Structures are given as structure tokens and as C-alpha cells.
Image (cartoon, rainbow, N blue to C red; front, side):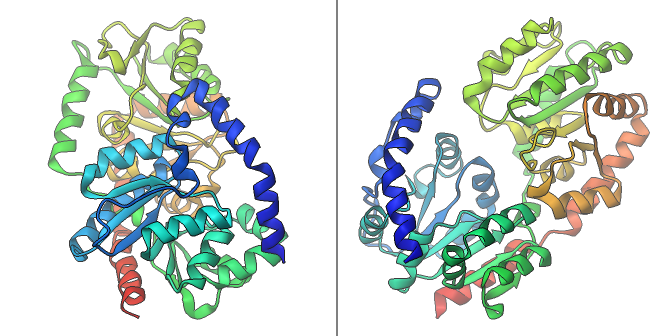
Length: 424
């Protein structure tokens, strides 16, 4: 009954969802493309191969899924992988990371007809969902067709758990129908149990984002980029990564304070969403800074700020900077992936809103590899101290890197959960 009501509501708001796509498409034209896929109209490239369907909602989940996808391709070469997402930026990352070695589509909207149409065309042998992107009709449809559904790298913050609990008549049956939850931490697992997941379906596997690989190619790219940023001077570089609306102004305010003490500092500012690139560039110019753009390959010799207005280079940026600030955390967005700068051995800063990475932030902060700041003044103070004390910055980065190395191994445990479900 509750899923029926949910489905009716979803159908009723579908015109509003389409209108939102149109509006977003004004700034990001890719939102206007491939609408048929969102309603289940997708045909796999190789119907003769059994398909494993992996869903990664957007960029962050897609990047986390990269080592998993490569491991699945190696482990199950006889099967075809289909990777779905919900956003154009996620789609671009999937194409860049895997090319035509996987099938790719937008995920169907969670209406009974769209999901049924999609499953009939794809006929997956398993659905792997990254982190928390759970949809009642999708899970129920797979359960009815005896398609195992695994929540991989599962996380559930206290805030999200409270939201699910408010609709427990809908979320409870959905969680109970999952085949397995591979949770990042025991706290996440406990919240899934409280929502109705049977205990025997819970596996604490750790966070697969710790299993990222920094290969020789990306290390060389980071080194070359750092030389480009230095130019004729040895400039200290602050990277502000994955910033959100309302956060860039705080970063720029902090940077003005930093420049008073470290005049030659370079700020590399990377907005989270590409449709905001030009807007953030205007903010920098309005604040009186000289601006270079990565998309133009501009020289940073005479620039205060480099706008990171390209896609797919953030990992390289982390390798090339001196200090990394991870965005989505000075606004109430829950933060982004701090493991990436930690893996590079960079001293890492974040705002106080870190509920999306609660356990990671705790581990890094306790080890001395992460500092949490509450506002522009605190951010500026932390950056100035680190820029003026390179030995302290190096030790902080080493502490972060040790945490990243110590927590590897989640991918292997997750693969065991997947293998067990496929073999049943």
C-alpha cells in the first residue's frame, strides 16, 4: 500500500522532474539529452552476455566505483557490466574512465513501468548500488525477479537514517529486500539494522575509497602540473576542491587573509558542478583577483587564482598542491572525499559539515592528518601556519597518508560478498 502511494506521487511529480531537467539544461545542455533512458528505454550492446548492473548516482560514487569495476571486469570477463548514473557529470566520468568496455545509461526513474521496461531489456543477473542510492520500486522489482541487490560501500548518516525512519513503512520493506549490505563502518551497519535489514545480510567491509591507486601516469601528471604552477617562482599552492554554492565566497574571504601573510600564494579553486564554473570565475574577478583558467591552459605566473574549470583532473590537482581543502563542508552539504588528498600525503582541511564522511574524518583528525575549520578566519589561520611551517605540513600530510594506507582492503572484502551472492 505505501509503495503504491509512493508510486502515485512519483507519477504526479514526473512533470515537475521533467521541468527541472529543462531548467537545468539551460546551464548544462547535457541535461536535455537521452531522456528516453530515464524512462527505461535502453538496449545493451551485447545481449548475448549476462549483465551485472552497477549504479553510481553521480561523480563521487563513480570515482569510488572505478577500482570495483576494474576488479569485476577481471574477475568476471564472461559478463558485461552496465553502469548507470543520474547526472551528466557522472555520465562523463563513466565514459572517461571505462570507454566502451562497459555499457552505460542513465538509471530509470523509480516508477513501476520505467523500472520494468529497463529490467526486461537489460535482464541483469545482479544489481550493485553504490553507497545509499536506494529506490523502493527498483529494489522491489529486482526482488520479485530474484535479482540479487547488493548495497556496496554502504553508508547511512544519522541524518539520512532519521529521514528513512520517518517513512519506515516504505523504507523498512525496501531494506529487508536487499540481498546484502556491505557497509563502510559498524555505525552505518547498525543504522541499516535499525531500519529493518536482517542481521545475516550485513557485512562490515570498510570504505573502498581507501583502495584507490595512484599509478605512475597520474604521479607524472601531478609533477608536471606542479612545475607549471610554480613557473619561475616556488609558490605555495592551496587547493579548494569540490566547492558548493555559498562556499566560494568563504574561500575567497579566507584567501584575502592568506595573501596578507603569504603574498605569493596561489589558490586553485575547483567548483563541484561544471554549470557553476563561469559564475565562480566572475566571483573571483569581482573580488579583485587576477584569474587564470585551466580550460584555457592559462599561465599562473601572474594569477592569484587558477579556476579548475575542467572535468576529471581533480586527483591530479591533489597531487600537485601543497594543502588541500575539501569542500561541501563549510556549507551544510556533508563534505566530500578526504581520502584522495590523504592518499597523496597532503595536509587536509575541511569545514565542520562532514556527515557524509563521518568515519573518515574521525580517523584522519585523530591521527593529525585533518584539521576542521568553522569559518574563513579559521581556514586562513590554518593555511598560513602550514605554509609558513613546511615541516609541520609535511608531518600532517604523512599522518593522513598513513591512515589511507592502513585502511585499505575493503575492495577485496566487498568482492567476496558479491561473489557469494552471484554463486547462490
